[in-house]
Image (cartoon, rainbow, N blue to C red; front, top):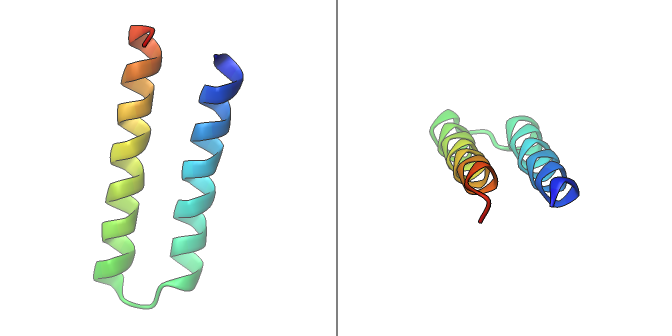
Length: 51
């Protein structure tokens, strides 16, 4: 389970970094960053709860 959690966090971070480099509009880039942060928080909460 720990490996899946780490892989998910690395994937979210990689997508956020790619969005930072590739998206031009600051609104769209920020929206992607908020989405990635929300998914990361949701994943962290599920990991800590043992789901």
